[in-house]
Image (cartoon, rainbow, N blue to C red; front, side):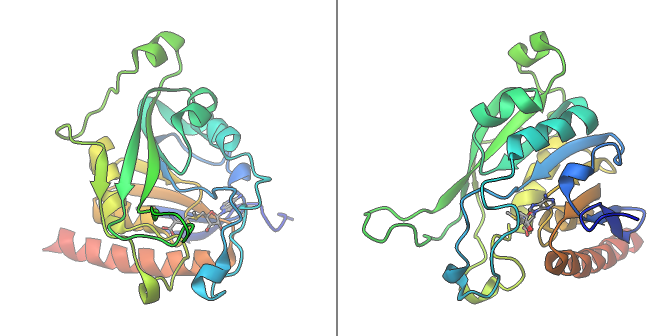
Length: 246
Ligand SMILES: C[S@@+](CC[C@H](N)C(=O)[O-])C[C@H]1O[C@@H](n2cnc3c(N)ncnc32)[C@H](O)[C@@H]1O
């Protein structure tokens, strides 16, 4: 009998598999993936009061989950050698060793809007960091830091995409814009390749993968967000079907 956090399939099509359960228990269940894009819990006890208590606490955000270690286990077991990873909210020096990343770059997501932060400071937070890295099994490749796949023309490390604001934040408290994730996916994978997001939330990575012609695997622990993701992915697949039929 599977435990309450053992990943079980919540949604499956030719393009997408969404698991409901604990990402820590995904190891061994997955095939090899071509790209990892994820926005894990930050361990900052995200404050639900900022959204009128609509969402409650974020699971895994109490600081007890060792995110770099868990991503390291997943990357070593399942991310294809010399391929790319993007991780929101963690620095390259926290991720490089556990995930075997070379050639890291810190990207900045300019959210186009100022968040609350500390209202007594003259600066309000308007950006988040995203670590880019190339997974390389061998130390010499890690030191060289070459990315085998540059799927598009080189561009700057600041990505500008408006974050959902105020009343628009009704699916997930830290929902990422699909065009932002689509930009990461299109930079680092080809059509038909497989993208993994072990902390899927409301499913933004999976939606972006479908809309850019990739396949995707996701996992989410919180039942509420599994349902939201399932609805969004179904809609994205309907749009992708229309695009391929046209
Ligand atoms: C920062 S949010 C991701 C938001 C997502 N990028 C979006 O656009 O909706 C992190 C998610 O990880 C989930 N989570 C926390 N611990 C987890 C675990 N052990 N396994 C799978 N999901 C987990 C949380 O419930 C939360 O929805």
